[in-house]
Length: 181
Image 1 (tube, one colour):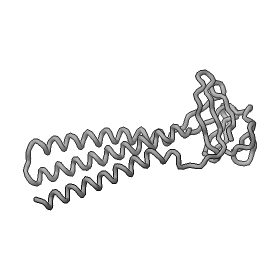
Image 2: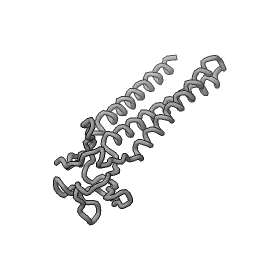
Image 3: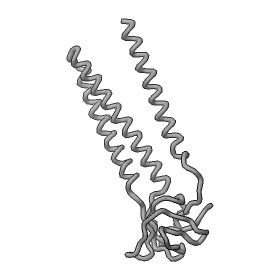
Image 4: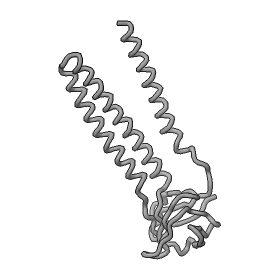
């Protein structure tokens, strides 16, 4: 019997280590990138700001049908460059980009969803171990818990991946463009 308790304590210590590591990643990963110049997109109606760091991939539309894709280079406070050409901010029709806030939200949702999926897998493992020994009511509870956790984790991970992949279209009619160094 003491051997089983030692294994349980070891599992608890390992799970605590994993939990602390995940909390560390969620807390400090958004701040791990360097501070460069930023393109600041300010909502004209409510003043809410979104930022796009220099070097991020964006699509800049100079009209409804003409656009340039590439990495954002900040030339000065009134001009940007995508690829070879320089584009004055006053001629930009819209900018499609993923802001830092959207990227952080996508990363956090994906991470938390993965934790739920792992919890569901652990619940299934506990259910199969319970079924091997004796079948009783608790193995069914573990199965249901595993299915629920994996479903929630799948939805959260999917939402996180969509947030990471999708960009927002910032039109000049709604957003004011400026450069912050």
